[in-house]
Amino acid sequence: MGSVGAKEVPQLIGPDGRRIDGRQLDELRPLRIVAGALHRADGSAFVEWGANKVMAAVYGPREVHPRHLQQNNKAIVQCRYNMAAFSVDERKRPGLDRRSQEISKVIAEAFESVIFAEEYPRTSIDIYIEVLQANAGTRCAGLVAASVALADAGIPMVDLLPAVAVGKIGGQIALDLRKEEDNFGEADLPMALVPQSGRLVLLQMEGHMNREELSRSLDLGVVGCRKIYDVMKQALRDRYSVTPAAPAPSVPTEAPA
Image (cartoon, rainbow, N blue to C red; front, top):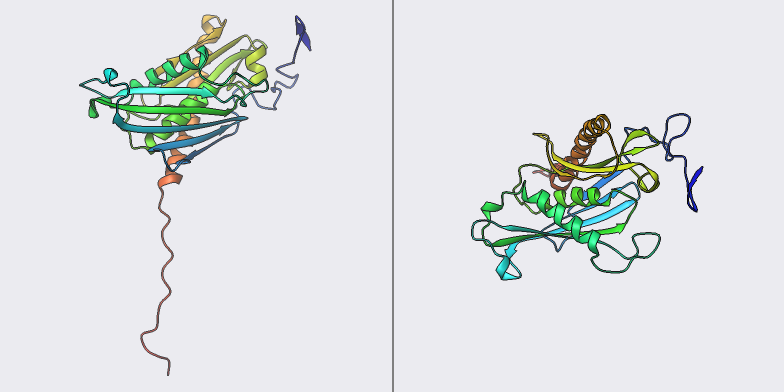
């Protein structure tokens, strides 16, 4: 281990090329998605992604509050992303901080670009994302959960929106950073895209990459998003698939002789 100030810096990539949790550089953390996890929301989803646990609920289209935000030609998309006070090791102050407000805004803008909002003028589509346990990549996990929840609510969209963070750790480009990699790595690049067209609807970066590293990161992120997209679709299939009923036992029409 090296050190930065008083902090010990873990070795993020071992001699065998594997990361501290045993993954390859291009490997996702385990991902589980449950669609329809809440019964009182119009749509909902629970995402367990590595050590992240995120719940999303969607309400609407419904009346806009406050009313001055109402738009005559389309629905507005509102998002509230929040990290629970107990979601991190050091208890955070309850309520929306500046980071939560910024993430809420970028997620709402991402969905505005794919929802057919003109179908529901003068209404609001409200997305609530609650991070119950955090371990890096929570905005991507929240976006994935919200996307499945929107589909569960029957909100028409161009497509689902998979999202993933790519980063630079130990000089290498890696997919789906965990907490230690996010804290001690050189760069973090969360992204979300429309799978059918490859159109990016969210792209942010903290840290430093050169042009070649950025290009490789985007390519790796696209591959990761397509894998996540398959899990999202399967969650919705599991939610709405109808298992054929077992045939009823035959009843004899005549008493045996």
